[in-house]
Every structure is written in structure tokens, then in C-alpha cells.
Length: 291
Image 1 (cartoon, rainbow, N blue to C red):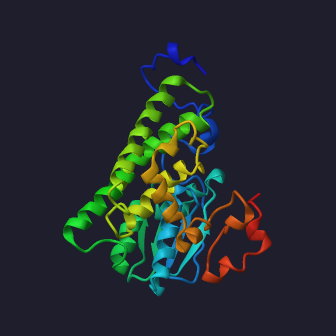
Image 2: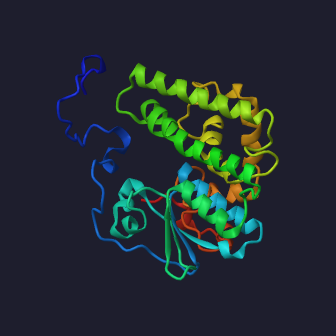
């Protein structure tokens, strides 16, 4: 790779498939399917196609929280999409999400099956569908949606920015790491200051704003993504740490973060979820990491 200090952008950019680091095999400058593959369909109206990355965890936590509230219509099948193997480029998945990113949801309870993609859109769709976890007061609804979209706009600086250059890039360069570390620290400070006077992101009520933000920023401060807690001194953010631990203790959150998870301790993995009993009846083949 050319030294960063001497790199001059070419007049016309061309794709170097070998330059992307850890995720080079799934990054490409074109859209559309690479192969034909139909998606499986389970017995529940809600069909989720996902992986337990932070964006995927948002949706499985949301569904488990809805079920905990008694919304039986939120029963779902969660099918594993292994992005490292390119499952997201199968024709069936692209038909649900033309952007080829997890998670993607199909709702078969509507007259014509409804596709929903982008994690924030799925949270909002489910909140409206079940009239739950989203304030009805106009001012508080606006507050909640503001934080939801804050997360959607901010997380790329954490994941694709800091996370990539600090953890996954084939070479480490000071400028991008410093630039994105500064921005992530600013974001952490935004959250910490807000949570100094608020139990949850929208006052005393737990909402889709918390469900959206926790898998990213809660994971960062608890050192379960990028192994960067010490580097970023995340212990400094006392209010954010309090909120992180509070949400982590919720039973629905514990279940939701297990779904479509294929790494970590076996007891924290449930590769696919098709029934609530799957959490108690995990078989050994579900616990073993995918080949």
C-alpha cells in the first residue's frame, strides 16, 4: 500500500479489490445480486434476515421487547445471514434489501407482504405497527425520533470510520484514527451529558431510541466492539456507563443480543430463532460456530 503521506488521488478512481482489509471480500463498488438464492420463510408473519452485529441486534431486541410486552403478533423467525460468506448478495436478500445490508424484514401479515430495510426504519415500522416503545405525545415523539436519527447518522463515524481504521484496516495510520477517535469521543460526550439528566434517552420511558443506540455505544463502552474502551477512556462517561448497564440487564435485551450470533461464548449464541423455546432448547449444532 502506498504510504499515506505520499498518496495522490488518481484522476479517475478504480477499484482495487485487495485493498479493503478484513472485509475486502464483501466490499464492492456496485450493487445487485451476485448469485441466485431464495430466502427461507418460517411460520410467523415476521421474517427477519440478519446477523448479530449492532444493527442486527437493534431489531432482535425490539422484537423481544415487544413480545415481553405481550404483543404476540411480534413472534418472528430470525434467519442467519452470514455476511462474510456473501449471503447478503443473494437474489432473495437483494429483493428484500436492494442495499445488501443486514437487517432486512418481511412482514407477511399485510395484504401484500411488506419489505422493510434499514434498522432505524424497521424499529419505527414495528413501533407504529404495535403502538409501543414510541411516545405518543408529539413533543416526546419528536425527541425520540431525533435521537433515533442521531444514531443512524452518527454510527457510521463509529463503525465505518473509527472501527475500520482502528481495528480492521490493513495498515494503521495516525490521521484517520485520530480524526475518528476525536469524533467518537465527542459523540460519547453528547450521550453522557444528555443522560446526566435523563434515565433513558427520552426521559423516564424506554423507547426505540435506547434500542437503537445501545447496541453501538453500549457495546463500545463495555468493550465488546473494537476492543477500544481503554484507548477511548470510555470509563470517563459515568452516565453513559450507568445507562449501558441498566439496559444490558433487561431480559429481552439479553435474549435479543443472542439471536443470529455466531461468535463469543456458546451460551450467548442462538444462530437462528424460530420460537421462544429456542432459547431454552438450543441444540449443539446451533451452538457451534458456523463453518
